[in-house]
Image (cartoon, rainbow, N blue to C red; front, side, top):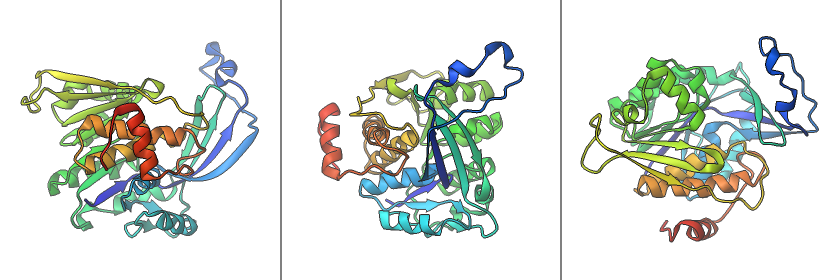
Amino acid sequence: MKLIVTGSIAFDYLMSFPGKFTEHILPEHLQRVSLSFLVDSMDKRRGGCAPNIAYTLALLGERPYLMATAGQDFKDYGDWLHAAGVDISLVHHVPDKFTASFFCSTDTENNQIASFYIGAMANAAELSLRTVEDAGLVIIAPNDPGAMVQYAEECRTLGVPFIFDPGQQCARLSGDELRDGITGARLVISNDYEFELIRQKTGMGEDGVLAQATALLITRGEDGCSLYERAAGSGQRAGAPVSRVDIKALTPHRIIDPTGVGDAFRGGLMKGMALAKSFKESAQMGTVAATYALEHLGGQSHAYTMKEFSDRYAEHFGSLSL
């Protein structure tokens, strides 16, 4: 199956703060915040939602197509992704801009404060899924908001199944844009905080989302994730019974960095869907993939063999056929 991964390409600047952010935030002065945190380490890493997802797919034996925009500083990154097994032929280079950049500080409680420079990502709408032949499954990960809506519309028009993953762009997307992205999706995925933004902006709860999409997956950090589907045979009829299955998170061998963990989850999830696994089994694959990422710095520094992945999956969820 031809897997298309859309979303941001970015460089990650990851910093560690040796304290707790919450100890420096004064609730009585939230109307005017001026804070600076002295970090004790910084690491520049290859990142962005789309390459992180594609990297995990490549680890799991796929050769995903990365469809995104990058700046004048992308060449070395692109060469590395190609060597890692990611097809970069659909990446559009914007010569007069830098690649988007993510600046993130993490404290000792794994709380994060981040800023994102959009750079070449602002040109993402210049790409079109209409130019991609034989797309089998598309993920619409956080990207330029207009491009995300455009890709969803194109998938519906072309009859290509897609995963809608608004992520941190829930804060930027309007209620109408979120509804457009949800409509017709094979799966909608967000974390629990992002889903509350979706609920607030669209007025759609779990039942409302499932009236427009086949399934909904809400990730909950160390508490795992929850999968919502309509009862068998009920289709997407509003008011039909909704089933919820909770999937536990794995206990990591060590916790190094949460950056890119959600992207690794999506890569494992997408691999399962490409293999026609159930949503539950696909989410369990995502859970295993996410745990590997949590045990390393950044979203692309972990590695494993297919056997190692299958063995770790089997340890927690039973045997896995890949």
